[in-house]
Amino acid sequence: MADPILEIKDLTVEFALHGRKIRACDSVNLTIRRGEIIGIIGESGSGKTTLVSGILNLIQPPGKITSGQVIYHQRDGQTVDLRTLTPEEFAKHRWTNLTSVFQAAQNVMNPSLRVKEHFLETAWAHDPDMKEEAILAKARDLLSRVRLEERVLDCYPHQLSGGMKQRCIIALSLILSPDIIFLDEPTTALDVITQWYILEILKQIQKDYGLTMVFLTHDVSIIGSIVDRLVVMYAGEVVEYGPVLDLFKRPTHPYTAGLMTAIPSLRDDVTRRKAIPGNPPDLANLPDACRFAPRCWAKAQGICEGERAGTLRMYGSNPDQYTRCYSWEKVFRQ
Image (cartoon, rainbow, N blue to C red; front, side, top):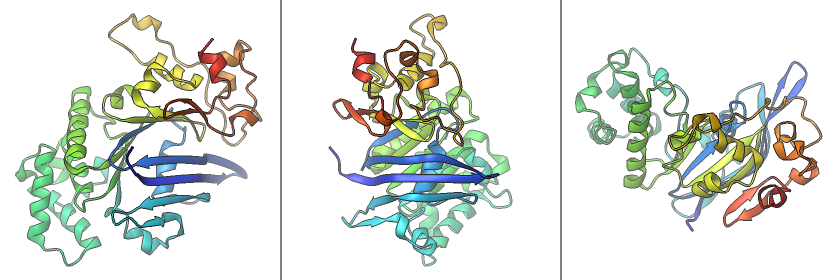
């Protein structure tokens, strides 16, 4: 088993809005291993993006990180709690060690700058002494790895397609040779063929550079074939995590099972696929019960009581697999 690269401990992020407190990320604990590809899945509003924004210290008012640690294991063997750093100290790690590609990232490109100027400005912001030719040489190599021609360096963003801009941003995120890259819905707004094309590129890049990658998505069918582990989030909490095939074949939380049942398949009748009934809870008015209980078929059938106290910890269900459902043995092994 690989050594950890990032340990998230009891990370909590809250938003204060109109006198209401919304806990969008609730005491999340997660260990990410060096060199692995991990997927974080869940419905919109489950807390995926908030979790990564908390890790990268990008939470903006009215949001606030109220507790937790983010322990980064550096290449030299030293560890640092990113939560204890000043903004200036953290800036030294962002892009150089930890980088991100957020939703619709292609829209962040400055329309008045050519692609090569994006690479130059990014590199010089972190190392003003870098030589222009060295930066552009690496940019050409990275563009070739995302299957773009060298001529793209002289293009403006409006001259590129959506898929090309997305690949430019992926190449740009690698210019400073980071340890770990977070990708939030990296294929959103792209056609299905382009989605798979970009995912294959990312998989090859991870293999070539030994990167650690974290994918965030609500569509498990998109990333299921390339990730090593899956983390399932619901209502701000991690409800299950483990090897991807185990979660597909042997889920041990009713929410995970519902997600897997909802995935369309070419192998069986699509009418057998069912959406999870109901809606996620109001994060500003959470019930004193299991957060999934109102939508849970096991609770509806009386198999589980849906008590909150039982969901305050994770339970080992299969090797390297953990669930928040305290009744998982009764629910899935009847």
